[in-house]
Length: 265
Image (cartoon, rainbow, N blue to C red):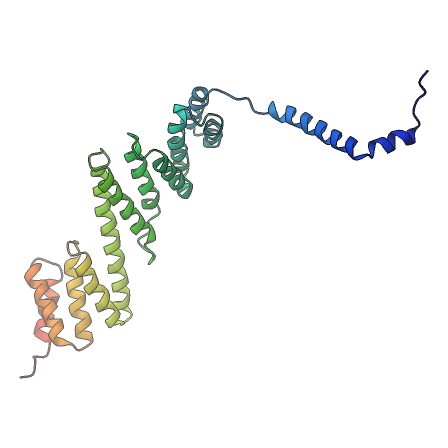
């Protein structure tokens, strides 16, 4: 008859390296079995439908979960392509523009010839456009948005989004010009006339078609007058009267021309 092994023998056996390794492997196997049942692997079609339903009820967190699961479990499925774009849309709807920009960019990187690539490029540009603030001097978002819309027009010129992109490019240019005008006004108000002159001349050169061109010409004339550069002041007041005879600034420009000292012979 076998006798029960003394307690000390069991403890010595358990302390041996081989027994420890066996114990660790057993625990790992048990843990894997448990975690393997935590998340059920669903067909990509099912996950995609679940994600779309979640978006409809604005449960964006759940939608992200379904889409990420789809892309992880079914990387070669046809649903994976649209899941990448839909994930970007989910972030965009939440105004998480940096995350949306990354995912639109990922879609374009993976599927540049897909029929929805122009749409992805448009909304990638919109992630920059939505963050524009023309009141700040830093116009990085405006420049970025303009560049992304220009890329759309260049790469996908025949797409339905090309016309929209062209309109947005015009708005970006308008925002940049308005920002330059505001900075020029600030310099003029604070009597930094040389800085104002530099801004206004740059504005006329870079953005000649803006609706406030008449104001820029008038403020240029005023800035030169304050600097006692009467010849240049006269030049811009006359240009204002010639180009914009019905401007709200024409009356003051005529008055300034009458007041300016005449050039010495």
